[in-house]
Amino acid sequence: MDAAEFDKFADEYRQLHAQNIRLSGEDPEYFAEYKIADIAGILAGEQTACNPVILDFGAGIGKSVPYFQKYFPDCRIVCLDVSKKSLQIGRSRFGDAAEFVHFDGARLPFPDNSFDIAFLACVLHHIPHAEHIAILKELHRVVRADGALLAYEHNPYNPLTVHAVNTCVFDANAQLLEARKLAVSIREAGFKHPVARYRIFFPHALRWLRVLEPWLAWLPLGAQYCIHARNH
Image (tube, rainbow, N blue to C red; front, side, top):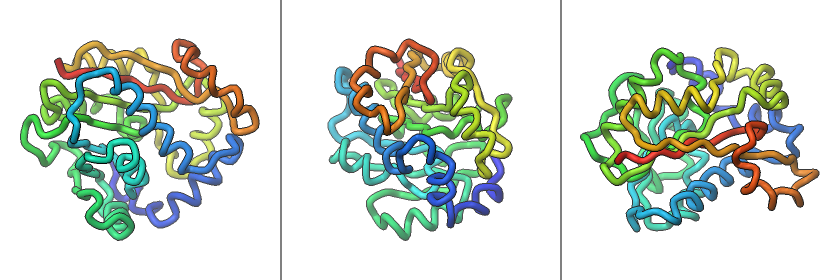
């Protein structure tokens, strides 16, 4: 993980992201919120702490913070990132709504069993695949026995997603990964029962069809996918 690479784009992250996703007809806030609303729905049927401690791994400038507050109103949020500049921006925007913690790229700076939820929003494609299991083992260490991992990634089988990644300046060194392979790595790291769900099938112009998306979660054509796994 190259901190300097992310420091370089921290100030203009939202603007660059908005330009990159303009074909979707949505803004970056839409994509930030849908993930948090999605995990709230996934976890609704499970036994989850009423005031969960959430690790936002690779949080960047903290774009998910307001949506965690909306969908998990009694949560405690820890935003972790290798980019000190991004963390500084997040801290200036959200104050004490979340903790902003620097990550050295190797060992998570937390004791064992610190979190109820580990959340990764399109982070792993920025990390060399050979390092994934080590990172996931660290996440397994800090997630409590009854906790959950929820990892979102871009789908390499969706041509519009591939185009967006290939034309994005801060994805210059990205390596997309298949849901199947990520699920294997998650299992090898110690998490149990990883389940992949495909997401985002329709752009804004066809948003009236989004009511169908829960029934399309099996179809590997969505723009992104989510893998949900438990720690027991």
